[in-house]
Image (tube, helix red, strand yellow):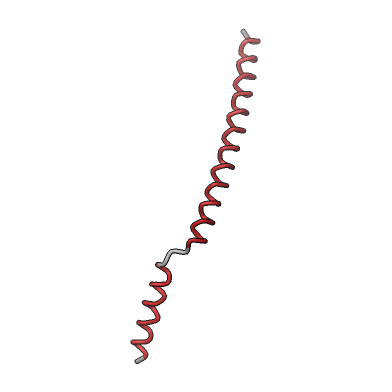
Length: 65
């Protein structure tokens, strides 16, 4: 009888874990949106910094010529 109860418990846990939880899914979507926004901001800042560095390098090269 213990084996039957153990099997029933394991199957119940697996079935419960397989069921989708819509709250978790919406939380995941919000987290993904935040990550995408932060990544876009970081990319923009990095691009701006790289552009400034390239301009400075070009100025130095022109001064050396």
